[in-house]
Every structure is written in structure tokens, then in C-alpha cells.
Image (cartoon, rainbow, N blue to C red):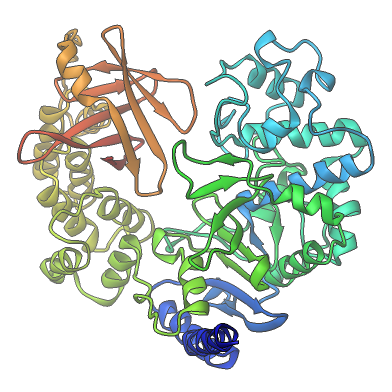
Amino acid sequence: MINIVKLIIALLISSFIYAQQTPTNKALHKKIDRYLTEGVANGFSGAVLISRNGEIVLNKGYGLANRAEKRHNTPKTVFSTGSVTKQFTGTAILKLVEQNKLKLTDVISTFFDGLPEDKKDITIHQLLTHSAGLVDVIGDGDFDYIPTDEFFKTLFATKLLYQPGARHRYSNAGYSILARIIELVSGQDYESFLQQYLFEPAGMKQTGYLMPEWDNTTLANGYARSIIDLGTMVSRFQKAGKVSWVLKGNGGIQSTQEDMFKWYKALKSNTVLSEHSTKLLTTPYIQEQQGSDESFYAYGWAIFNSERNTKIVTHNGSNGIFFHEFMWLPEEDVVIIFSTNAYSREVEITWRLKKMLFDNSYQPKPIKKNSYFLVMDFVKKNKADQADALLSLIKQEYGNDFKNANVLNQVGYMLLENDPNSDWTLELFKLNVQLFPNNANLWDSLGDGYKNKNDKENAITSYKKALELDPTISASKKSLAELGITVKDTPQKEVVLSPELLKSYTGTYQLDSGHLIKIVEDKGKLYAEFAGRPGMLLTPRSEVKFAIGSRNAALLFNKNKDAKIESLTILESGEQMVAKRK
């Protein structure tokens, strides 16, 4: 009897503590709304929907869907869902399983003729779990309209990265295969099948690529770096009248917060799939990272375990402009749906919102301005004689080890294109060479800044400095020729590096976006592996600089004060990307 009393008391105390820790929906709405509203001044733009125990906690838009028209984001604004599209594809496959039109164990040679031997036995399950060993992408971007036969012929001709089923490695191309299987088995276009069997039963009328009757006033424009207006994704689809195989099935589905909430309710109530199929959809099958139990992959969903030992079903997706994240905690009847049309790492807020839901004491750090937005915002509000103040602000916000040379460079070129008389253009380029004095590309940009101001003498000096740092930089040669200075081409000498030095560069490097670059050494040669693509040969141009395959790009290895490699820099098309060594 005493033990029962103690148990009841313990349960009451536990319930009281949980109640103290977990804020009410009304308090949550106020707290989260204030947090997001304050973020708008720092470039936050999008929409958030949160539901708990069947009650809407928050459903609101923030910032602008179209800045030129001063049109605000709302719960009805159409955003790109990115790779959250994959769980629609997974659901469609399971719908075909329910219709007895295929099995998860089916091999892809059932659907495609003339497959290479190494790919004939890849199963649908392996495609769904990213364990087929396929490369990540085929083609040049989301809007590369490769004909169907050519796309899949090229994809199936690629070398497998590992034996199918051995491990997880994210592959957008694998989901393109699934989309094609859906078409071949159903006899319908991929989007038509989704509309008939997924979206219509769920009541979703504003979800798809081309089929919804879009109201242009609801479409969100995308803002790269939160400053560059790139228009809507729907207009790109409409202009082409089709969806590329680079994107179909793995990304790019457009939707609203309200439609995605309908999708959540359809999954929860087994409106679209049976309870058994929904369980298959969200079962954790394979570790996302070998040796780590932090996350697993299901069928288009990533599965995590919460601090409370409850299940988290989630996925996010981005094209670098839009970002969408869908988080579902089925055991706690919680869903968080977040979309933004101005993506940066600073606005990945879904996990912060989750913590706010369950921990009353948690106060997230304010949403920061991304570095591009910070610079542009400062430039708009201050005169060019405040360049030193801008440098101080950058160091204050990002530290003295600020390593992204793209920021000032890109903002400078934006001004050069849109406001060529601005004094800020030259000042930004000057600041950049002050921060990165050994970057040839930035001296070339400074030359462009001086040329824009008709300062021929300093322009020539800057272009020559660029060539001194990198004799292969063709843009500086061309600009000097335009200014009447001829630069003789010097033959590229073969550079031979020791095996020990090459091996010192090997390892994994991570970009700010989270993507990994692997540097591997094989038989005295160095290779770089980007996002699941086959390794690209790195040809040495100096001890630390390498050409990347046949691309007009370079890779630099960066040393710290102790002469150890701490990061690498990729230079291509006037941009610079830094990846830190893990």
C-alpha cells in the first residue's frame, strides 16, 4: 500500500514539474510570435504553423512574399518545400503497394531495360532509404531539362559509390528513379498521380508543380542571401511547361502552410495510407551516419529521438533560396511546419521552436542577420566614409576570423550592377583585400571597382596584383588588355608534390551549408568528392593550390598559425566557398 501511495505522489510531482516546464498554448503563441517578429528586422521572412494536441498554437506569416509589391507572407503563401517532396514520393510508392501494383522488394530491372549488372538488383526499399549506392545528382541544376531517356541512361551509367544496401548516402537521383517508377507502374504523370491519390483526398488544392490553379498574388518570391530577388519557382515551371528530372520526385513541390497542415492531418488520420503503410513510411530503417544512433532514415523522412524519448519524424529541404521543414512528433501530437523565402543558416529555427514548446525556461538566441543582409543593410543606411565602422561591425558579429570573402565581393558586384555610381562599391572591394590580401580574385574585383571609377592607374595595379598572386586568372588578363596592357601567357609548369604532403590534405571538410567535401589520395594523386559525385582529380598548381577536374575552378588549402591545414577554399565563377576541416 505504501508503495502505491509513493507511486501516486511521484506521478503527481512529475506531472506538476512537466506542467511547470511546458508553457500553455496561449503563452507559447505570445513568446514565439514575439521572437519571430523581432527577427523580421534581421531578414527573417516566411511562415510558421505549430499545432499541439489538436490546437493551433501559431499560424502566421512574417516578412514579405514580394518586397517590390510590399506583399506580406501569410499562411496561404506558396513556398517551395524542397526535399520534403521525398516523403510525398515515399507515400506514393506505398500507395502503389497498397494497390498491389508493386512490392518494396522489387528490383529496378523490373521497370527498366538494359541496366548495367551492378544496378539490376537495386530494390525500391534501397532507393527509398538512400542505400542504393547511387550518386547524388545528375545534370546541372534544378532546371536542366535533360530528356527522359538521356537522363536515366546517364544516371544508370554512373559508377556505384558502394554496394547497394551497405549504408546510407543521400541521393536525389534515387528519388528521381522512384518518380519514374511511379509513372511507369501507374501510367500517369508523377504529379497527376500525387494529385489524385494524395493531395485530393487530403483536401490540398495549393500543392504541386504545375497542376494547381495558382493565384499569382499568393506566390512567394525567393530572395537569395535575403537580398537578391530571384522571383518565384512556379513561374520557372510555367515558363518551361514541365518539371526537370533533376528535380521531379526529389524536390521542388510547392505548397502552403495550411495545405501542409492538411497533409499532417491526413497522415495522422490514415486518410491517404492505411495505419500499416503509415508505419512503414516512418519506420527508422538505416543510420544516416554510420556508427551514430542520432538519426535514421525511413521513406522520405528522417527519424530522431527527442529528449523525452519520443519519436520525431522530420525532413527539411532547400534550393539555397527557399527552405522548408516539417517536424512531426506523433506520440505528443505536435507538428511544426516552417517555410522561408529568404534562406540562410541563421533562420533554421524549427528545432529552436520545438524546444520552446517543451521547455518553458528556454529562450533562443535572437535570429541574427546573415552576413550578406548585414552588409547590405549597413550600406543602405550609411555613407561610404563609414567603411571602418562596417569592418568593426563585421568583426563584432562574426569575429576576427571572418573567412567568407564572398560576402563583400557579392554585395559589391550587386551595387556595381544596380547602382554603379555608389561609392560603396569601391570601399567594399578595398575592405575585402584588407581582410583577404592573398586572394587573387578579390584583387581582380578591386580592379573592377577602380575601373568603374575611371581610375585607370589603380585598376592596372590591382589587376597586376591579382596576376602576381595567381598567374592563371584570365579575368585580370582580359581587363588589362582592355586597358592597353598586354600580359604574355606563361606555360603552366608541372608541379610535383610529395606523397606525404598530399596525404596531409586528406580528410573531410564541411561547408557552412553543412555539405561535406572529402579529399582522398589514391596512387599519388589527390581527388575531391562533392555531394556524392565521383571524385574529381585535383591537379597541383602550387604547394597549396589545385585545379579541380576540367572545371574553371581552383581549390586552396589553408593553414593555421601552426602550419596545419584547417580549411580549404574553392574559387569558381568569382565566388569563394570555405570548408572547415572536421
